[in-house]
Length: 122
Image (tube, rainbow, N blue to C red; front, side, top):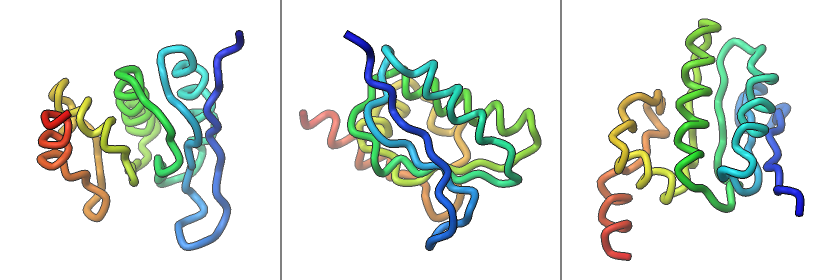
């Protein structure tokens, strides 16, 4: 059975800037390499916003995706920010102690304290 590949698409216009990438679907160990590569191909813009609102599932490999994209954006002297980060991904980032390595921007910083409380309640 083929692994589901999450989509990474460039959103043109709309309420967000034309430099917004939208990730749709599950990001797990079975497809994370392809998802990372699809995102990096679209990093030819000056500033990049990555919207994760349509991510349906994540595992710990999604943390490495964000860190890889952050590193690649810095290598290209681009600013990157993440928005609508799923609570499960926020919890994983807090668990691994890497949340501070991601540039969340001022208005999209996740509520890591709430994510931690929600994770411990499950």
